[in-house]
Image (tube, rainbow, N blue to C red; front, top):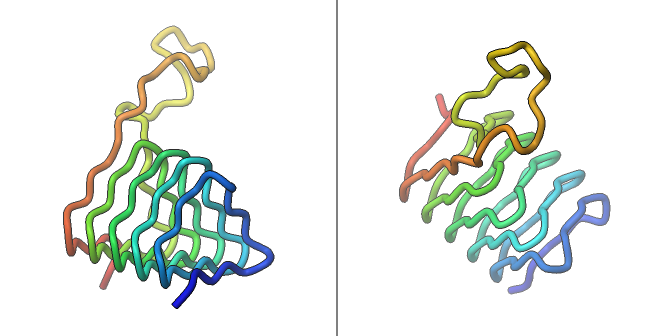
Length: 120
């Protein structure tokens, strides 16, 4: 069994995809991301730099997983679910100035083995 990557997806050359993983159309997997065996990355899904994903994880269409997230084995992330990395997501700082990259520290989401987010 090999890795299946659709031609319209973008997978960084430093990403590591486990055996049997499928990446569907328009999905993006960024640098240093690690996906385990048997994962499915749906159409238009996003996996950020350095994200760690276990075996048999399913990211449905347009799910967004930002760094430094960690997903355990068998996790299900439903369609268009967003795992963000800003502990206090705001467009502006307390003085009303537009926030910039240095205005926060990335706070990673950890999803434990077998959890389902965005499921019925």
